[in-house]
Length: 68
Image 1: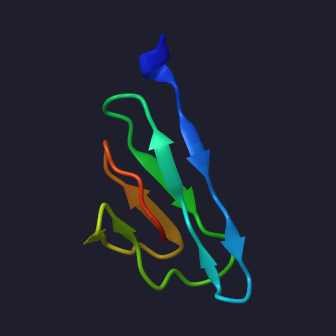
Image 2 (image 1 turned 90 degrees about the vertical axis):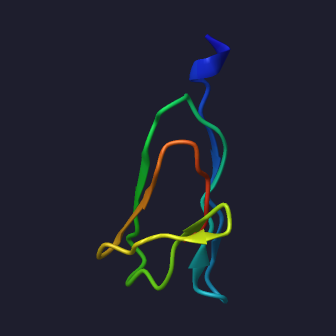
Image 3 (image 1 turned 120 degrees about the vertical axis):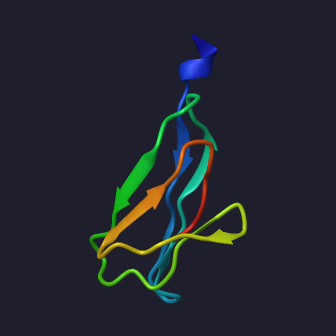
C-alpha cells in the first residue's frame, strides 16, 4: 500500500505572489491538477520544465512535482 501514498506541500508567499506545489510522493500514474484561486497563473514548471498554463488551472503530468 505504500505505493499509494500522496505527499504534498503547498506554501503561499503573498509578498512574492507565488504558490509552490511540491509533490514529494505520488502513486504511479497519477496526474495532479491544482486550481489556483489567487489570480492569474503566470508560469508552471515541473522538474525544471515549463508546462502549459490553462487559465487558472495548473496540471502536472504523472510522475512530476512542480511549482506554479
